[in-house]
Image 1 (cartoon, each protein chain N blue to C red):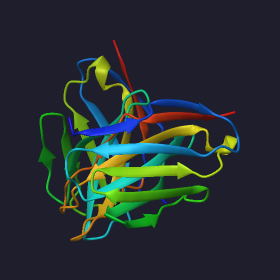
Image 2 (image 1 turned 135 degrees about the vertical axis):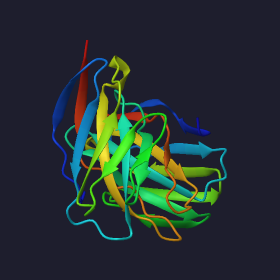
Image 3 (image 1 turned 180 degrees about the vertical axis):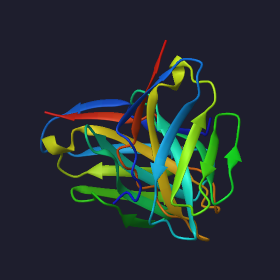
Image 4 (image 1 turned 120 degrees about the vertical axis):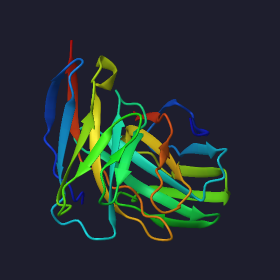
Length: 113
Length: 112
């Protein structure tokens, strides 16, 4: 299995509080992604990174920010959590070589109450 | 938007081949076909991918039609552990990288 770890695995937080989710990889892959998954929507891309300090927005980026200060870590921050951000969050990594696959973490279940 | 069409759900008897279709009629010449699956809210798992030739690995076979407008993922001997949501994804592969765009996939139920 690819070395990718998400933390925390579960979190309950209150509306309006900041939350940071961490994705850590040991594969030295260049590309990292954050997705969210909600019933009826499948996985939707929030943000992705194509290198240290290089990030771009995905389909559902509003309310989220990301940072990547080193290759192995990609942080997803909810500046002020809302109930609509209750979801399962998945991180993925890819080495970016043509035709290769992405590896996914086990997910973080976030509940905003 | 996902550029593929898949049936919402399918059933398959344990031990039989599971054939999962995918329509990608607008696929471009530089787009690969990828298949992933997700078992009960775990992270998606890569299965196989191809450009125009049929592909086989230890998990599955991928059959792509000659016009590349559709493909079929084949699990040759489905087991109960193959019950999952299967995603067919088309993706441009350049020297950089493009994120995977997921649709809603096909929920495969393998029945004993």
